[in-house]
Length: 396
Image 1 (cartoon, rainbow, N blue to C red):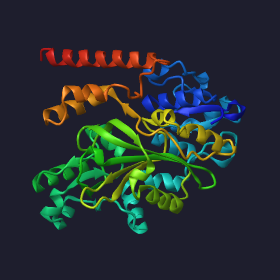
Image 2 (image 1 turned 180 degrees about the vertical axis):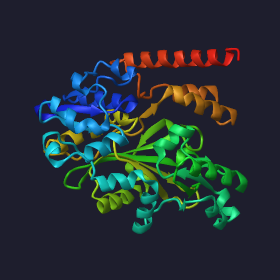
Image 3 (image 1 turned 135 degrees about the horizontal axis):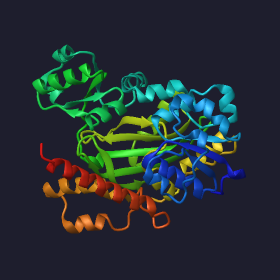
């Protein structure tokens, strides 16, 4: 794909690994990308990082419309988190005309973020997904049989605040008393909870379809990857994955097209599916309406969704990407270590297999052409480990 026309000016809103991937993929495509001046230190070490004007320092979502006036128009907005995507989508039309973005309508974003509304939409469209029940009180568990309860888990309707509070995405259920305790704790903590069926199968049954839908509702790119390892084991993040052909994902692409057509979706997306070991059906789990951790991996395989989004926001023609490199792997070493320990303890992975899995794959942070973010991450991790050890040894 040719470089971004007219050297587009882009403000990337976000932080962390996702922002790092966006900076790299867009800068290498020829875009002029800036980010907020006070983002995380790891990303600031990237050779591609350029700070926006001082007026953007300390920028909060509610101040975006006013602070954008410090930037020349047109400057394209690239939102890299759920909060920033929703903030950009909510900008007044006059502001969006000067600072365009390729994002979905607010109604679509709210539906995808709210897992209860998302499940209701999947029911209405009769799309394959895990059975889900809204839990408004602990008494709602009384109507659930023991068999259903033991094959389900508790998850929040809104995941980001939940993860910040409990450091997990969901709770597995051991027995009814434990379910009652967990649900009570969550409800009293102000979380809207759901009981969801657990789709059986190992981490390798998880597939992701990432891609892009343009302003004309045309799906311009699909990129499929398969999870090979994850951490934590049940409700964690991918730590090792491999690119696969879309044809390997069964009915998943059709499920997405049906959903996106119904909610008038536009923009970048990353959708998770799990193949049911019992019948082979690919059940949709969730859809992220933004760039994700491994967005650079997709670009290095040939699917640069960030570039497509910039072209779409600028009103330029958006090409369809129908081919990409299959069989390429990506590993996040620090988090993968935990997954490796679990696999080795279970006798499913030996030293040779582990070594082979780390030879050759891409990494989301380390790159030979941009090494300083990885150096910074290692320093931060070591510093955090030292502080934790010091805290444990400190006398009471």
